[in-house]
Image 1 (cartoon, helix red, strand yellow):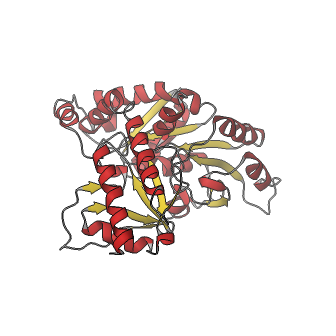
Image 2 (tube, one colour):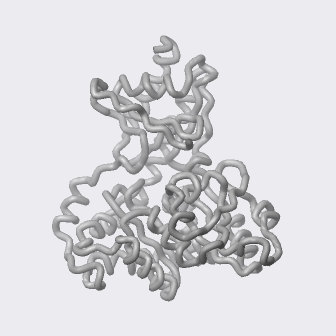
Image 3 (cartoon, rainbow, N blue to C red):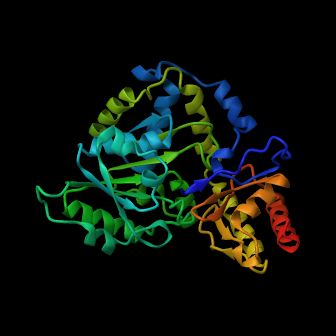
Length: 356
């Protein structure tokens, strides 16, 4: 189990500091106004102007020919692999990747694919590990059809794939006739942190998508981009999976607002994550992974308290976090302020001191 949500306690105090995930963000007043004023139409037949504009902007942002609006990032991943692969094919991905750990076995259940888990530090495999996992084409082994990377690597600590490694993986994949897919759930966190443009970060990748319901603050949606032929086939699977919508411009307007107002401010989340890590690391016995983006993973075991007990103690103080892969994950986002970060550190310090 990679993710353990905190137990629901009806007697627990209201949540004042929500560090559970960047999916916890609420639409801002400006975003709600944009949604209310959205031009809409029937998205399923291509007649929603707000959806069409969003897809055009994301395709241009990622340097691809076309894009399609999807209800969720998981549907982006699933539809992409259903297009890239055939039943019995093999996908290569890091062992902690979302496609393995968090999508309910959808790729096996819906496509009949198997996923080869690749090892590597901080949620990333090396080009050398990828190369070593490839086998000669043989009727005895499944066709290795697609390689998938997650930018940023969530369970790895919100870590960023280096551009050189992404390029090397693309080169190896193309030399071996494989498709390339980028799970870009927090892609814009990576581009803001590195200064590399989204177009450059996704160059060479056959399919890539960005999630609007995490750090960008929209209530729903992801947009996947690729060649026109690829997107035509993604649309077929979107229809089959029940993902086609009607007046989806209401949701697309939130995503357009996010592109205009919430991308550059991701740097604030990164700064808050660094401040949290810095504060926690000053508490004796707290082991903290240095954050690269907006995720902070830490373990309090060295202070004589388990992660589960720490999460429960913080929840009693109105702070919401969860265990993930044996560590506590705190996620900075647009609804988290610098003052909340300071308060969170104070609570952890007091819990360590009192052990309650």
